[in-house]
Image 1 (spheres, rainbow, N blue to C red):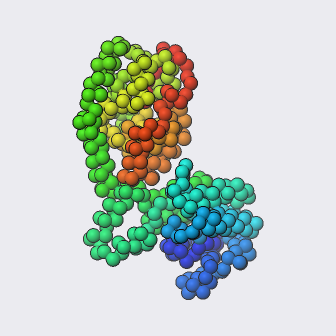
Image 2: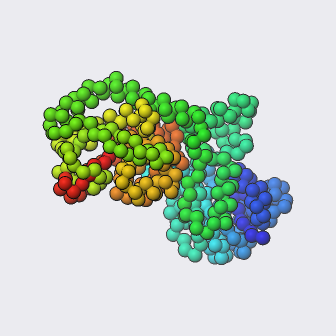
Image 3: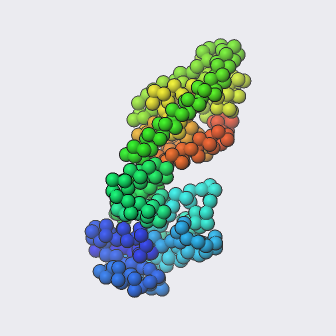
Length: 414
């Protein structure tokens, strides 16, 4: 029988995981600060205080580290570091010395950065970086959003007092605003990590919004509100752009191009033309500066060239926020996106990768960031991406990269 050690065994997440691990046949070695509470809660398990950690994890197949100073605790950054960094490293180091092959660290979405809005997030990020420096023991980070079970805790605990007929829709509304994760889903992933040696070093877990009708309704409402705002307040910009493009260079003012949409199906994406007529089509990072018209440079910098995509939004081919649609000839990116499930959602005018400055010249990196967005997506994140885009975050591929200045050698993209 395989043995697994769990730190923070009296905490909410550990309590939820323990029955799943026992049902899967694991012998558990539980650690906590209050040994009496441990024995009372889990009389069937081997329970120890942390002073015996190094000796008792010997022979274990893995350590699941759930002990934490959580984000609802009060304390200074140094207080959080003492628990979330120093204590984590001490346990991992003892596990390493005891010959434990795997250390599963439960961490948080808040630690993704690049800016940290709490001592909790900062300390969890520092713990991840320090754990990654250890050798001789595999480290797997499970990155979690708000975790809940059949009942709720923390700020969501108020839902427990509500009747089921009200509780479920209210929770779904709250879950549309921020990502969540049910403990059953977490348990399945932990069991996968314990049995699958090729699991990546970091896994981002969430319920996702695929089945959340409120997220879909609010997201669509945000899309159509954007369309209405463009038509009400920026119609004159679109009209002037049409005229200026038509007068400044030969060719249609609107550029129509096949792109890869949801489920890998091609659709026609509309933009204002920013390049000279008859330029071959290619990804933007492959285009030269000489391919872009003077007016097009301004339109790309201000993102005015994206405005005709309101047509794609109206026809439900695109959203305001989502992975940027790629060309049908960008096979490596399409393959990565299909492999990571990115093609399951509608593409967007802007997205998480764009505000972080990741372009299509890095197919795997872009697809992984797109997949991260799908796990993290929520109405609040979408609004943050829109605001970041409006402030100019995420330079265009053209402004970021120096490429060949010969237009005849290239094709156009976003």
